[in-house]
Length: 177
Length: 256
Image (tube, rainbow over all chains, first blue to last red):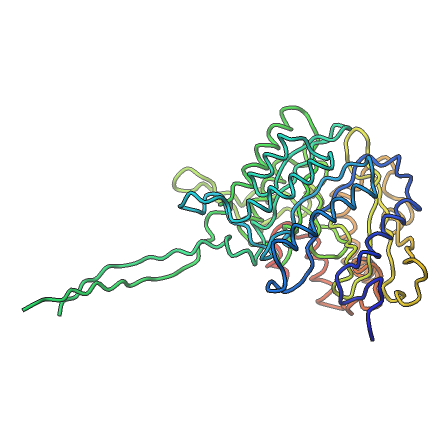
């Protein structure tokens, strides 16, 4: 049986289902009484890694956050990065990990999402700069005075291979023939 | 006669889980919390993967628990996660007093799984997902929050029943799912002026221990009332209550 255009128990969220959730928010909640929204991450589809690309991640992140802005208007959204916001999923390396001069492997991703959050007016430029350099993590104060600290939890996520430091302990032995 | 020298490298490969904060993300969190504490400012922590449960590595998530315990309930007004696609709660308890012992180098060792279950300190709200993966309905949540303390006072969840997708026309039908107070405090024992804090949720888990239907209801709401909610009984219910009371991967490992 084909899936409905509105989704299935075994499928990612179709656009029509996601968009209708905002309609239901307007129908059930007086949005003018809502101070802010939080989004706890995971924009990118649950596809196989070889079916994904950096371009897909960039496209989906942009479309998602622009949709949030279009639907919620003046309500700021404070987002956190999920394991499905990078490619491959869950990959986040500590900045201290590299011993060359290359940037963090996911620098492009952190720059992308932080610039989107800034473009939508949810965080300011200095906060966005911090997030870009620190795995998408940031702290920002709402207009009500609440401090929101957004952290990247992939650094305790079991499948993130960079959480495991592989140590090679080697013994030299020289033999002669 | 020429000599040939062989250098043989004998290597042992092992995994290093000893540094719980290689990225510095928890140092960042601590610095921000210290600044908020000094400024008498309330904080929400938002993140994706819950610190308790099977997806969290023991060491870093235990350090996170330790940080949350240090700044709760005074500074941290709320913790919010996602990832599981399920609607849920996760309690942070204080550590048992007797478990700290002086270490040889002047530090303190702590058993991160030795908790004082009479001292609930904070609660994480794990939000429902819109995405139906896997076998869940779609949901979103709205919270009522105290304007001064930023503590959660109540909440409601709305859901779209994925069983009905082929009947929806022209748009998905979103339904009211439940009100948190009406479900978990139906006779209004909890003062209306008190937030739905760790003490409240701890009392809910204690009721669950002697009331199977309450934890069954929690598990049904976790899937947003999916017809495909897995059946759960006996040890499965006990493990589910234990998971709510697990602040870190280390504590969760004791549930099985």
